[in-house]
Image 1 (cartoon, rainbow, N blue to C red):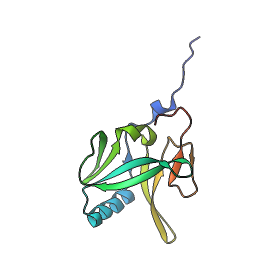
Image 2: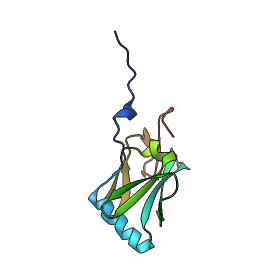
Image 3: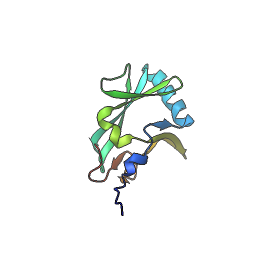
Length: 125
């Protein structure tokens, strides 16, 4: 008999994805801000432990992964990659409200507004 330990993180795609709606929204925001790219950052805060922190930047920060969606560039700090690996960014309109949303397979819980999330103990930071 052979015993193996299952690691769900091993099944996650080693990428970040964006829906066409999210790409269009971020492109408009980059033009408005006069920025070249989006930085998806994570801070320890919010009601669940971690919070998405979007920043408009001119260049790739040191120690960050780059993702390209056509002409759009998105960066994620290597230190936060384990928290967002496999995440899909979408832009959703509900009634009069519109917002970027994050379908994060690493999140074990989210707050009601979707701005913060938690991960299971032992998950990579």
